[in-house]
Figure: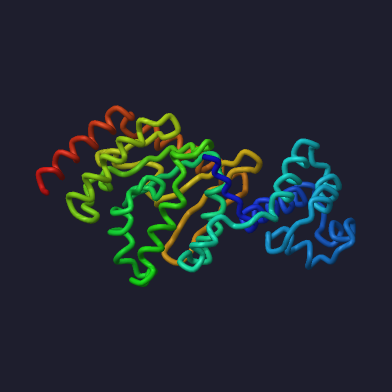
Length: 286
């Protein structure tokens, strides 16, 4: 099944970052760049922040003015040209926080995702019952929006059933396997679902054992998204919002942290054994 996850706001976000980064690297002032394409500095500011549609011809003119390589100009111009499609998550817009909509759009565009989760299992791997139990007591989700919020989470998942599945690598704290979200039956089924996903070539799931006292995930959960036509970003969520980190040194730091976490985690074989052990424990509790 063809799965096109177009999102104009997410595409504008990526194009805007490329425009700003290229201008700053070229040491061109915003007023000078705006004059080059015959617009106001205010419009250029909106273009760089992704708050307005960036015309492909203006994007191309700016990037050439900044001295960007031809292949990078073509890549960013292609992104700008795709930003007039509809938003795939529109049916769920009313239950997605405004600060989270950007992530949903970016996640839909990503080709690869790394996630370190310290408390619960990644959203891409959750069953409907696990997600329902997890979101059901949230301060941010009214009871009347719970079912639609769960449907939105399931709609985000694209590890299977599509011809361009997300390449997911996840490292999760061992405690997440033991937290009885939804009770024994829900957890057993969730863990069985993990094992099924782990059989897929596009999924790498590892558990980091509790006895690893110090590692690079201690500051908290994070996600790194990589794209076929744009530079990667790191995403750090907090209670009422999120940080979108795009500067190369920041993204490189989180990418290195991801590599180091994978090295300290159980192998996939040992992870599967740890999951199977919990499955038998939860079965005995049902």
